Length: 509
Image 1: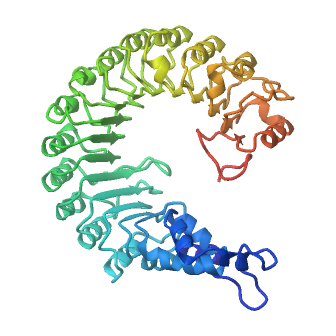
Image 2 (image 1 turned 180 degrees about the vertical axis):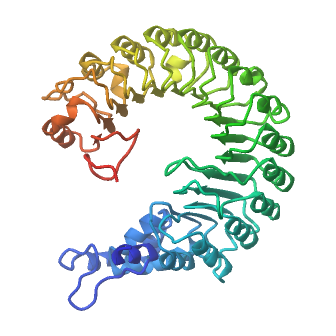
Image 3 (image 1 turned 30 degrees about the horizontal axis):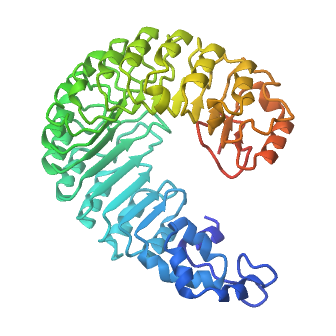
C-alpha cells in the first residue's frame, strides 16, 4: 500500500514540519485561517462525517488532524470497503476506533483469513461491535468460529468470499455454521460465495449446516444465503420454521431449491417484506401460486430463474403491496406483462432484463393512464430485449411520469429517433431522467447526440452509458457536453448504472 494512503487511513497524517507545508495549505494561508473556528465548531462538523471523510480531513491541516484524532474514538460506524488495507494498516485503524459498533472491511489484499483472525484474538477493543461485514478470498470454519467467540454480542453478520479456485479445501463446512449458536443476539445473517472469480460454491455444507443455523439463530429477521449448492428446500425450510420474525429472505444460486420452499413459508408469510430467490434453476411459476398470502411483501426478485413463465405475473398481480419487482431472464411474454399490468400495482422499480420474448406490445400493455405504475415507476430496466424498438421507448417516455432511471442496454432496435425524443422535449416526462444506459445499442449512429446541445436537454441527467456504441468515437462531443453539464458522468465502457470514479471517461480496473 502507498505510504501516504496508509497514513490517511490510519489518521496519522499531520501538517508538515520544517520546510514542508500542511496538506491542503496554500502558501501557508490556510492554517492561520482555521483560528477563526473554535474546536467545538470543528468537532461538531467532523461528527457528521463518515470514516473516509474524516481520514481526508485529517490531511488538510494540523488543526483538522488533531480534531480528527479526538473524534476517531467516538466513530460508531466504520466503512472501509473501498480501502484496500493490509493487516498492519487495519490494526492501526481498528485501534483508533474503539467505540465502533459497525465495521465493514474488504480483506482481499490480506494474505488469508488468518489476518482477520489475528486481529480478533488479540486484545483490541472490538467487543462493542454489533455489526460486522467482511469480504474475503475464502470463508473458513476458523474465521467464523473466531468471529462468534470474539464478538458474542453481534446483531448483524455479513460474510462474502470470492475464491479463485474450485477447491473446497479450507472452506466453510457444517461445523463452522454450528458455531453460530453462540451469537444469541443475531438478527441479520448473510453468507455468500461470489462467482466473480470462478463458479465456486460451498460444497462442504449441506442441509445439516442449515439445521445448525435454524437451531441456534431463532431470532433472525434477515437471512441471505448464496452459493450453497448442496442445500435443498429441507435445509432452507428449517430456517423458515424456526425464525418466526423473518422479514427478509434471500437465496442466491441454489440449484436444488424447488417450488415447495415457498409452500413452507406460510408461517412467516405475514411478516416477510423482501423475498429474493435468484438463479434458482428449479424454481417455476407454480412456486408463486400462494404469493397473495404475503400481505406485507414489497420486494420480489426471481432474477435468473429461467423457468418462470407467464403464469407468474398473474400470481404476482395479487400482491397489492409490491413496489419492487425483478423478473430478469424469465420466460414471460407480452401476455405475462398484460396480466401484471392488470393488477394495478404501485411498482417503483421494474426489471425485465433478458426477457427476450417481450415486444413493444407488452410494454404498452403495462401502461395505461389510470394505472398506478404510471405515477410510481421510477426505475425501469428493459435491457437485452431484441424486439424492443423506438415505439416502446415512446410509450415509456409518455406514460411513466415519475421515471428517473432507464436502461436500454443491448436493445439493438433502439435508434437515434428515440434518443432525440428523450432530449428534445423540455417539459416532458423524459426531462426527469437522471440515469440513462444506452450501452451496445447498435441501432444508434455516431450522430445520435449532436451539438449544439439544447439548454434543456438532459438537464437533470447525472449518468450516461454509451459503451459499445458508435457514439463513443466522437469523444469531442462528450467533452463539450461534460463541460456544459459538469455533474454528468459519461461512461464509455460497459458499466451498469451509476459507476463513478471521478472521471467522465475511465477504463475498467
